[in-house]
Length: 339
Image (cartoon, rainbow, N blue to C red; front, side, top):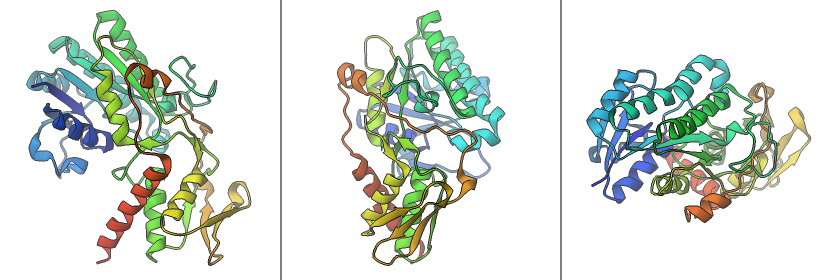
C-alpha cells in the first residue's frame, strides 16, 4: 500500500485528490493547521478514512514531524494562501506560506525521506503579463501579484531541489480550475452563488470587477488526476495543465445565468457595464470598481499538449458543464439555507 501526504487536504484540490488516492488504495495522510475550532472543510465526508497530522507550512519542525509520522511515498503540496486579492493585503504572509513554506517542506523531505516523490502546486498566475499565447512550459514568467511572485519562488525552488539533490520533485503549472467546492471568495463561486440567490429571489444584483479578463477554466476533479500522473513517471518534470480554451468573466456570468434559465445582455463598457435580463429588462449585473486589482492579468490560455502527450491526461468536464455543475450545487445549497 502506497502512502501519500497531502498538505492543504481540506481545500478544493486536496479533497478531490484524497478521494482519488483512496480509490487507488493509498493510505492518505493530511496536513492541517490546528485551530481553536476543528474544521474539516471539504473532507468531512472522508475524514474517517484519512489520518490527520497537524502542522504549518511556516514551521519546519512540524513538517519534519509530519514526514516522520507518514513516511510517504508521495507528497503533494497543495497548501497555500491562494486568494490573489488577499496577497496584496498580506504580501508577507503570502510569501511565508507560498514561497518559504515550499522550501521548508522540501527540506523536511530531503532530511527524512529523500526518496519520496514531491508535487508542487504551481499556477498560471506566474505568467501574469503573458509573453506569448498560448502559455506552455517554455513561456517566460511575468507575475503580476504578490501571490504570483511567491508561487514563482516555490516553482523554482522545486526545480532547484530536483537538480541539486536529484530528488523526484515536479511542478504542475495548473491554470484556473474550479468546482462545487471552491470558496465563495473566488470570483467563479461568487458568480454561481449569487446567480442562485438571484434566481431564488434573495438578491437582485451581482457585482463584479473586470469582466473582460480572460481565463482558462477547468474542473478540479480533472486536474488532480494530472497531479497523480506526474508522480507516476520515471523522471520528474514540470507540466502545464489547462483546458486550452479561454473565456471572459462575462462569458462565465452568461453561462451561469443560462443554467437557471435566464438570458443576459451586456450593455456599456468598463465600469459603466451592466448585464440586463432580457426577459424582464432588470439590471442583474453591475461593475464595481472596488473589485479591480492593482495590476490585472488580462489573459491566460494554457497549452496542455505536453501533459496530454506524455501523461496521457485529458479533461472530461467542459467549461459549460463546469459552470452548470457549480450553479446547480449552489441552487441546492441556497435552497437548504431557506428551508
